[in-house]
Length: 123
Image (cartoon, rainbow, N blue to C red; front, side, top):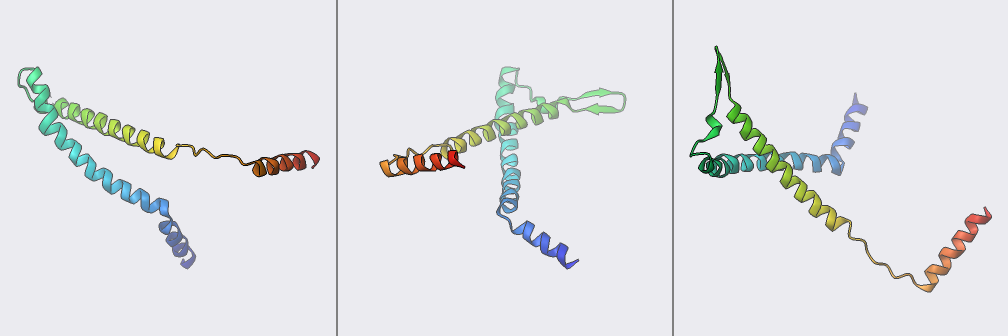
């Protein structure tokens, strides 16, 4: 039992788990911002083009079942906005991370690399 607790403590103390926890918390907060953006800005803007109708209240009733497809449209818009923003963030981070450093190879380093390659061939 103590070994299990020790392993769990090591697992939790890894940086990647903490990064994931922070990401989930920030993602939840970001989702509420996007929902507000969609509900209070994008839906009214779309409503202007379709005659002032707020489609978030669109429903289809069949018998006693109510299908809120307007809410589904909101969820799709939320997803697309979140996915696009995440795409932009990942693209920006990749640009920063993947900048290759230009390393000027000195004659000494070049000579050492040649020696290394020759030693590899001999072995």
